[in-house]
Length: 454
Image (cartoon, rainbow, N blue to C red; front, side, top):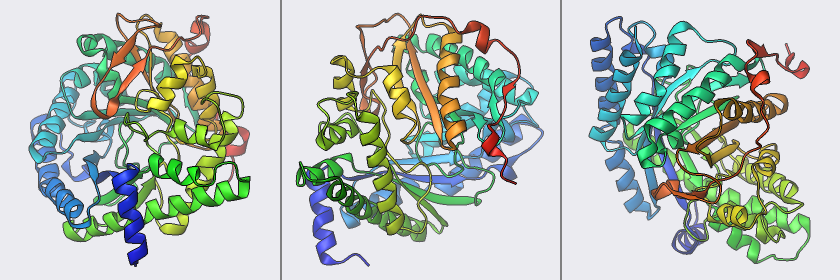
């Protein structure tokens, strides 16, 4: 049980340090919705999601009011549509009709986003999965709350370079179809390696086929809490630094566990995991980059950045797993550029480049996230950047991802404004040398030798 002292500490973290439950995500299996007729399939999907999620938002609001804990987002994750739509979908427009159904039911139940317009093609693509992937640009341009992801690699099977090359085209096309809104469609699209089945964070959320019929997963975030805790031990040794991060992560995870259990009981849905991720927001004081500076860097991107981030990520996980038996998802430190004011400042100061961000992703959660790049970046270059990021995940047996935003009509020196939690970002330069001959090879990159663990 949480005692009175912990309650007081939690109130302090909420009021002054931007502690929040970033999301309650309801995972919903759509396996029992599969039908050979597209109309029946869409009706089944709408009914299953609506019946399962109609009380999600009101329940989240009641829990927030009862405990005084901000719950920022209520979200839904569904079984990858590349699987669910395979029997009924004959054209791209058939898949797009499912995206429109997801968008409608998300609006009707009041959630912020629905994730799972996705395909898992780590080793190869079926014709229907390729059709679904090609439908993504139009689907994202015609919806508001649908999030999309493609899993194109894993440690066990390698990297599907056919899918990676296709995603370069898909991302570019998505940018073009949403160029009137600064290519915002690309903020809702991510390519992953080693994607977990229980991730509550968008855009990479979907309900894996290993999961329950319905499940509650909670994502907690507290960069401001960690930074404030570290201010009290400024200049002290590494042991003190690590203990402080670990103890703070423990407290934050306890808040997530409390909310997750309460939501599970009130909704009558099994509790899945708490994802303790230091996910920043554009708000001042809610920045992972600021934590790295508090650890001792003049600016994020300076020498020592990767080591500091490795320390932070590891201690966050160590604290989290002591607070809950079911820590999962991604759990670590996110380093999105547009959503973190400290990262934006580092880019503008010339301290942080895409290449340094790529190095940082070797030791933290996810990868190259919410990075705006010039709108004229070639499709093959986009694919090459994705391939680099997935290779880090494959070789290191960790989740990595790329969420790149080629902003049509803008170049280096410009700034793009997405609004809300998506924030704003400077356009970052990319390496101008071509990788076209590499990414245009057909097939896949084999799994690394250490994948053979049978």
